[in-house]
Amino acid sequence: MEYGIWKNSLDGNLGGVVWAQHPDAQAEFTPTAGENYTVVVEGGRVKYETIVPVNTFLNKAAIAEGEVIGLNIVIVQSKPDDPGYIHTQLASGCTGDPGKDAERFAKLTLGGVMDGPPPPVVEEEAPPAVGGGDAAPEPPVIAPTPAPAAPQTGDAGMIAVVALLAVAAAGIVVFRKKSLNK
Image (tube, rainbow, N blue to C red; front, side, top):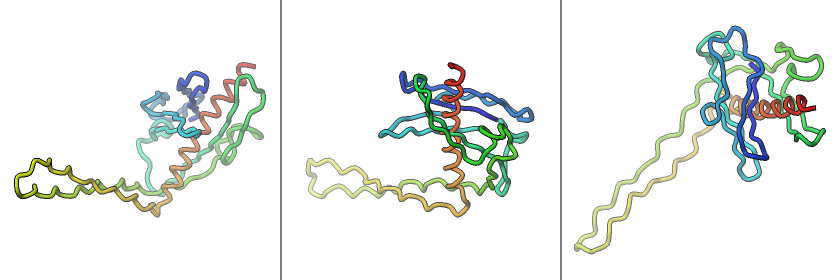
């Protein structure tokens, strides 16, 4: 599957497009802002988040630990009024010489499922003060949740790759849009 997502820096609108859907996929993918992707600008950084169900790019409903998938990420930054742009890709097989060739994509071996963070710890309330004072009881104290340890399955790397995929897809859209406007 080849798709892109973006946030227009002039009006803040989100956009998405699918250029190619795998012919053997069980379902079609439609980028829908707020549902399966978002692009947020925070502190001068652009963050791309996307969820793409496996059955939209493979002919099966799920993938398992140890399976290998191909992935290529293209990152493009450009402006409609500026002919220059920034372009890079992870692996090859999407742009440049020799053109589109999925056999050149990076091969990723999938790790296991990550555990979520532990639930917050709530300390018990102290008993009311003796003597019947007018002071209201203190609210319970919620202890901060410690950050979970990174799993040893390589999932952190996969998350980074998926994030890069989202960034790349957005760049592809901008580059393609720019190419179409020439």
